[in-house]
Structure formats: C-alpha cells, structure tokens
Length: 504
Image 1 (cartoon, rainbow, N blue to C red):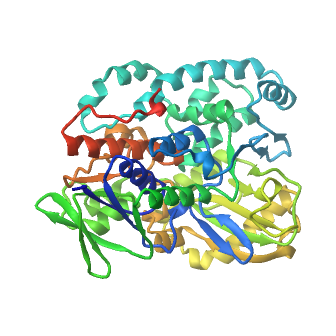
Image 2 (spheres, rainbow, N blue to C red):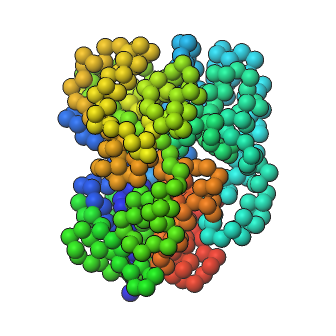
Image 3 (cartoon, rainbow, N blue to C red):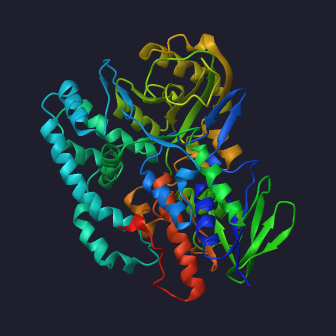
C-alpha cells in the first residue's frame, strides 16, 4: 500500500515536493486555504489585467527545470521561458541609468560607458565570485540537522570563501571604487529583504548569478510555473484541495499522524509536510512546542516587508520590463526600513512593466504595472490602514518625478494595494515579513529551521522559512532536501538521493 503524505500549502515548495514524491510512488494530497494554487507565486486577476502576486522574474531556471525532470516531465512542455536583455534598468538619483546584460561584450561596454575605470574590477569580481559560487553553492544543497554537519568536507572547503566577518557591502567595496557601481552590485539583497550593509557577504552570489545566468520571464507571469506544477501533480494522480484551510497537525506523542481541517475533519497520513509560512505554521498548527515557542518566534529577526501597488493602466509605457529607481541616499533609507523601522518611498522603488515583453497580461494598448517599495515589517507597529492613502500618493509622486510614468494617475482603471498588515492578515505572513526570517549568519544552515521538523517526527518543512532560505531557487533546493529526507526516513536508506543535476 502506498504511503500517504499530507502537504499543507500549495506554494512552490509544497507543489515541488508533491511532484517529486508522486514520482517515487507516494500518495500525495495538498491542502490550500486559498481558492487557487501558488501562494505568493500565484496571481491576481483585476478586471482584464493579470498580475503576479509576488516574484516577477526567474533566476536560475535550470533549478525549476530540474524539479520537472525529477518528476518525469519537461518544463518546456508547460511554460515558455524567455531570457531578458537587458536584465533591468537601474536609475540613480542623479539621472544616471545602467542596463546590465549577460552578454559579456555588452556589459563591459555598458560598464565603461556608465562607470569608467571599473571594467577590470568587474572582471576580477566575475572571476573571484565564480570560484566562490562553485564552493559555497554546494553548502546550500545539504541538510543541516546537526552542528556536526559543519564538519563535512564540502562545508570546510567552502568556509574560507564565506568571509563570515564581513557584510556584502564590505566585500563589494573591495572590488569597486565607484559608489553607484557598488550600489548596482549590492542592491540585490532586496530579494531577501535585507540591507547590503547587514547581509552576509556570501550573498554577493546573487549579483554574480544575475550576471552569469541572467533573469528570465515566464509568458503569462511566474504564476504559470505553479499552475504548471499543479497540472503535473494532477497528471500523476495527486490531489490538490483548494479553499481548504488546515487548523492543526494531528499527533500521537511526538509523531505527526495527519492534519485537522478548519471544518473539523481529520485526515490521517503517514507523513506531513509544512509549506505554510514557517512562523505562522509553528504558532498555528502546533500547540505543544518545545523549541519554536511564541517567545522564540518573536525574538527571531525577520526580513523587511513590502508596500505593493498593482495598477491596471489604460496605456503603455516605453520603459524596460524591470526598473529599479533609487532615491538620494539608499543607505539612509534602508537603515530606516531595517533598523529604525520607518517607511520611505524614496529608498528604492521597483516597477514591473511586463507589457513591453508579454502581450498576454492585459488588453492591447494597456499595461499591468506592478510597483514594490521595501518597508518595515509589522514589528514596527505602523497603522497601515491609516497611512496607506498618503503613502500611495508619495510613491506615485516619487515615480512621476523620477521616471517616464509622470501621468500614470490619469490612466489607472484597476488598482489593488497590499500593505504589511495585509500580508499578515490575508496571506498569513508572520509580521508581514514577506522574505521570511532574515538571512543573518545566525539564521542560516544549522541555525535556520531544519527541513526535518525539530518538533515532530514524520513531519518535514519546505519553503522560504527553512534551509536554505527564501527565493524560488532556494525553495527548489528545499523541496529536494525535504523529499530526500522523507524518503530516507521511510526506506531506512540514510544515503538515498535523487539523481539530481542541481548538485553538479
């Protein structure tokens, strides 16, 4: 008889784990509280406009390709993935614009045009960071259940490359003398909700990955990835129950034996995988916790949040697909967001303009404009319901003053706003910290929540709140690690692994 697995949450981590385990002969059912799959990698439909809820671009598409391969499928039979060139536009406060590319000749020419004298430094960065990537990447692809896992040869070999005493900003200052060039190579910590001045230096790998393998667009939005994953699950005989919220995890002693739905129905299973927001799941699904108590969760460090504008606009703008607009003093505003806990629309504004690339997201001549501003998480106790109208005005004023979207307010016909309070209330994101737990060294590897639950046996965790961290590539890795751990525990083969090219 097939072993039964209940997965809580149909975000990409839960969907990926389901795909992998179905292909290994398990019976899998996913329970999702929302009406559709995807979590924050899902979509909003506003009138005739389609928006990604959260992430809008794909890095390291080979990781997602590998998830499909391990499930016996070819991702390209389900979605269309296109590399973008340029990757994005960076616009600095003085009006300088920079257009990065993976094409080596283009990027060298662009660096010489915008940052004269930095080409040699850039080539040194590429060489050194490629070497680091080849060593550090492997460390993210192993579970860390014990401190003794730090003694593995792969970790010990990578340790000198970790540069554990410095920040990302410290490391990049060793390469680049031009301040705007430094900013261009460090702002990527916004992808993990941290300031470059606080993020560990290992995250210089994010900018290296961008320049080495690029940024990709999925036709129809990244939401098409999770819809495709759901199709594979259904093709494999898995079941996905939407509009079905989980209340708690069934236990016998310290063993997970199933789940309890909000309706009161109990569903038994041999194993449980949690793909909900980690801190929310611990505080909601498990009543008797030994490690992740409410007090422990509260004292943990969390990422910043985001203020979101989804605007259906009845015109098109000739601006790049991705745009990042910096204010006068990025460090000052990031400090205010991450340390002093004050919001500012002049820190960094991200504008997604997919209509320039993809005609499937809005009617002809119209645009789904997606705007993201980093803001403090809900530890700041900001009354966003009260502040929201004024902050919206400030954001649109900043955009009008610094981009070609000077008249955007005249053309808005559909609109949705999400604040940190909305992330917490409507999406169960603990403290509204959309990038989950901070990626400080004391919350990485062994010190991050483990993929095998530390509270219950037969219970596993995948997604951004566990090792190795947030972002779709990391979530792909976590789903592989989690699935491998479950299969090892089930079969008794402690060395069992997928034939996984992500590890090469």
